[in-house]
Image (cartoon, rainbow, N blue to C red; front, side, top):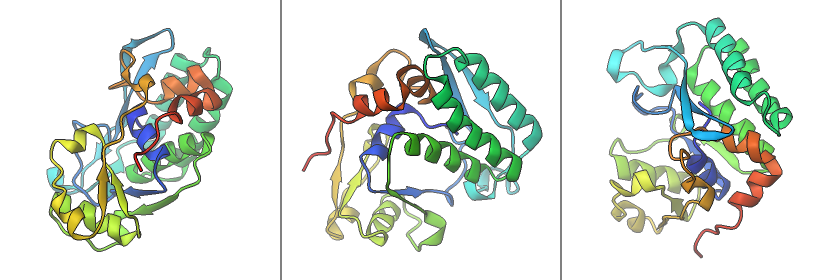
Length: 224
């Protein structure tokens, strides 16, 4: 739900985004929520959460989750996001991305679809033209690193981009066995700004604008 800036930066460097829609839902993660940062003080943040129904309890997969109250969630997104960014310099551009999410909330109660739309909308505004596929559409191992290597190979990619969080657990062995390199691209400087580790990318989108944010993200190349 509205990705963090570090996630958006990593996706901007990728040619293919594999949406992990058949992994276990983690209620403590950002899968159904985002932290909105105040335009003039990104350290001041508030959770924007969408209550969900887990049909199989803790074992529920992301793709199985349904919004508990889509109507209320839609109103909350519209009101809270406008409250935070309605006076931001680039609200017009940000609101176009938010409108896509509101449209999705009016059409589906599937959390995975809404979360995907929120990321696609921001990526499209930044000019990303990569491919989006879903892990549920491909066969892969149930072991974490093996699974990621399987999915990377399945889309024909020769390189896997790993974020800082994933670096703590990733085993490069399965990638090496498949002839796939693993890269750990450094996040752009903007990601190091106070509050950006947890804040949604909406802050940067609304305060810098799509063109400005694109310039902030472009200078950090993926190692050759």
